[in-house]
Image (tube, rainbow, N blue to C red; front, side, top):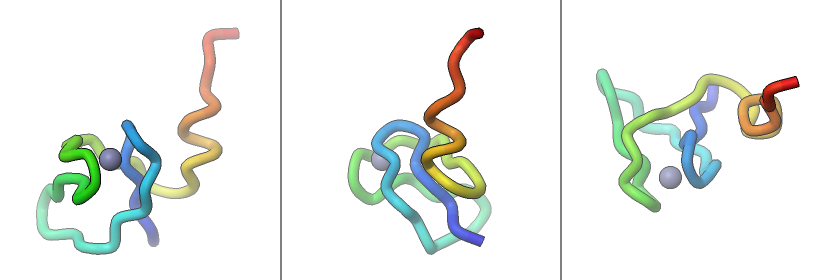
Length: 43
Ligand SMILES: [Zn+2]
């Protein structure tokens, strides 16, 4: 399962316990697709 950076949306493969985004350094990663995660808005 791919993880995606919650900030920049880049895919991240390495998973120790908690991995930083190698692109922006953000520490919050999301399981699954970036589209689903990023398109959540308050309806
Ligand atoms: Zn990132």
